[in-house]
Amino acid sequence: MSESKATAITKAFNLFNQPMERKESVMSYCVNCGVELEPTLQVCPLCNTPVMNSNERNQEIPPSPYPAHKGQVESVKRRDLGILLSVVLTATSATCLLLNLLVFESSLWSLLVIGICICLFVFTFPAVFYSKTPLFVSLLADGAAVAVYLFLISRLTASDTWFWQLGLPIAVLLTAMMELYTLFAKILPFTILSGALYLFVEIPVFCLSLELLIRHLLSQPYAVTWSAVVLTVCVIIDIALITILAKKRLRNEVRRRLHF
Image (cartoon, rainbow, N blue to C red; front, side):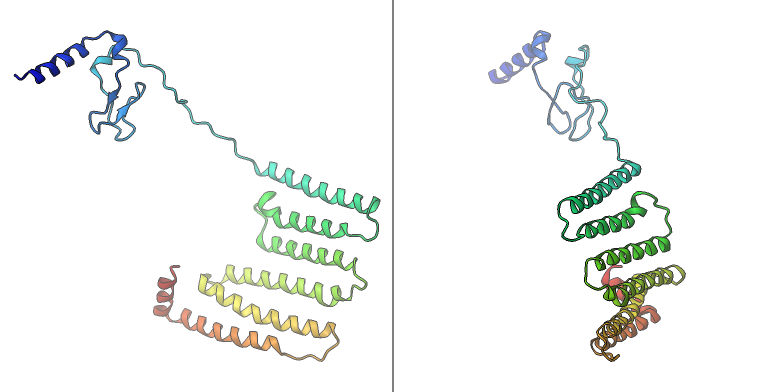
């Protein structure tokens, strides 16, 4: 046996027979992957191999420096969010109204802030306060909130003619179209392609109605100009969508290429 090998064996024997205090300072290594291990670990964090050290079998395992249970923050309840939202919107409306009445009295600008707060409350009601609100009822409430906001704006203008002849009809028209779209999606087969078809059917109707309402407000003769361009484009798109929906191979190919 060579002298270097005998020296290595002697050192290893002396290390094994060292006092317990010194063996505790020797780091352990995983027998599988060789990673250096903390004394408190029971398994290797890299390969999950159990830590086995014959020198430490009779030693008391020191406590782990890591917490035994993971901390978890309590989730916020919907009721808490509703209370917070109600308080913030009410406080904003009340303070702006008092500021308007007591300090800045030149105009009722606080009506704009109050109208926005009303719209935010109505828009977020289904998500924050009552998630079981029917979609038709929710859309109807949204349209009513927008109409109220436009009415409050009309109080700040010299005339409210625009509200009755343009603002309110547009709010009613949009609400009716959203309700109709929801009805189509509920009673008819609804996919991305069919949803696009329903949308491109309603867009030209809205544009035609909008142009006629504007001409009525301006006392101009009824005619179709820019809305005819929108109508033409939408008709072409509708014909293409109907063709795709009618042909199964085309429908599957579009879905495959567009990944839906």
